[in-house]
Image (cartoon, rainbow, N blue to C red; front, top):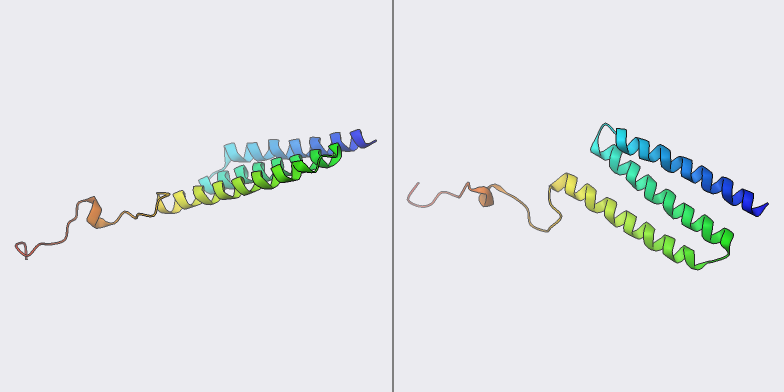
Amino acid sequence: MIDTILSLTLAAIGLSVIIAVTRASRGPTPFDRVLAVNTIGTLIVLAICVYGFFDGRPEFLDIAVLYALINFIGTIAILKFFRHGTLGDHTIDDHTIGNHAETEEEK
């Protein structure tokens, strides 16, 4: 009975992952793709938790929490890159590209 419930639960999660992969490949915008990849990561965390529960191994919850944290940080990093074009602290402004400020001689 327990094996049947585990199989059905993991099959439902697997079907959800397939739907999310389809959404990630067909997403009209990059943000739809990021959301789909984040959903895949969340479903993997759920699958790890379900498997750990049915197998009687609570240490799988620690692994799932760590994976969820990595998934969250990765999503934030990708969205920051989309917004700012860089992951570092520096910003690109007109002065670094080549539009130097006027000197006293040019005035």
